[in-house]
Length: 227
Image (cartoon, rainbow, N blue to C red; front, side):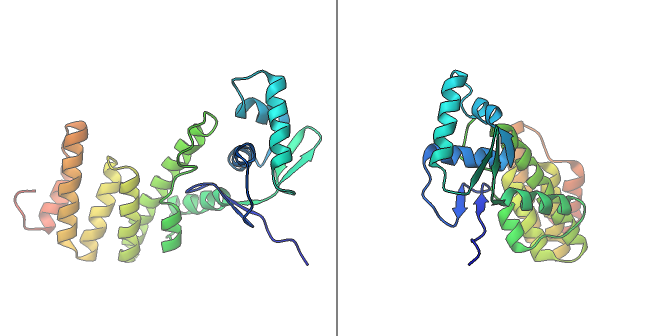
């Protein structure tokens, strides 16, 4: 009987399938290889995961983490380590890049791109990857909102735009895309409400007003003088 495919999730939190109990050291090792790998030398892994202790101790910690990892997940080949599992980040990176280039998103993809990479993890090695994925997913959601508005996929467009703005509440281009999606859908009330909320957020956080183009778009579609 073939061995079930190993799957490792790092978007929205760390999870493994088949479900196995993970120690803290093995969790950190699997997460690092999923984000920075899937292959890396022992020296690199030890130095990144235990950067604040001597190398000999860091390597000892790494050996312990490898030993505690579930069988087959981490393959050691001399000085090289390899994660033997499918990683959700790989697939979502492909989905996000396709959306930026003009592909629409499904509801499931919008939901997955509404989540951050390893939320709650504050380790130095993780932060650059977290920031990069956050920007990528916001760009993808915003681009998909524009694409799907043009394709008259209004329900999905507004879902994608809402997710983009939730991820970056001060992102004016995301607000613009979402408001235009509401207007194209014929939902002028939702567009006006979203504009008011965004204008308040900009004023409270930055002390500025929205782009005049956005105000004109809403004003021209909604007969409301005081927005």
